[in-house]
Amino acid sequence: MKFNPSHKKQLDDALSHKGLRATKQREHLFKVIIESNHPTADEVHLSAKTNLPTISLATVYNCLETFVECGLVRPFNFDRKATRYDPDLTDHAHFQCKESGDVFDIPINDEIKSYLQKLLPAEFELEAVEVAFRGKGPIAP
Ligand SMILES: [Zn+2]
Image 1 (cartoon, rainbow, N blue to C red):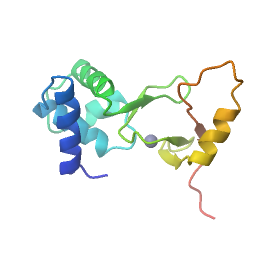
Image 2: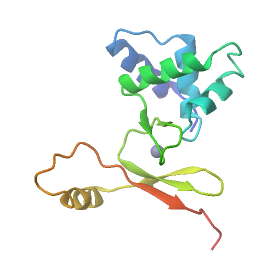
Image 3: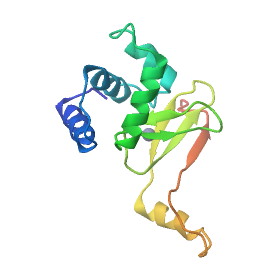
């Protein structure tokens, strides 16, 4: 997805809500996340260095943490691999291709969500449902 003025407004609003400013660094890192496919911190760092050659990995981590706290991105993991960052906060699942490593968004509708919630025994309190698919894809028919 291409970074657009509504992303800039989303960034400004979320940061100012926490009393923070959208610095040039933060804006660039958010742009990198928007324009990447569920990047890891290392991937964000690598992309960001094109425009911000001196930016450190520690700065990237700090910034990503700020984005998570501000509700701009959602962190998730496949197994115990590096955390990935997702700017799409709507409910959806992820599919990871075991060959390319590419991550795909898989929509989860309300019907599926409520079905999954019903699987949980009554004495458990649900906070979040995360669904991860693994396999090969997309493959030609
Ligand atoms: Zn996603």
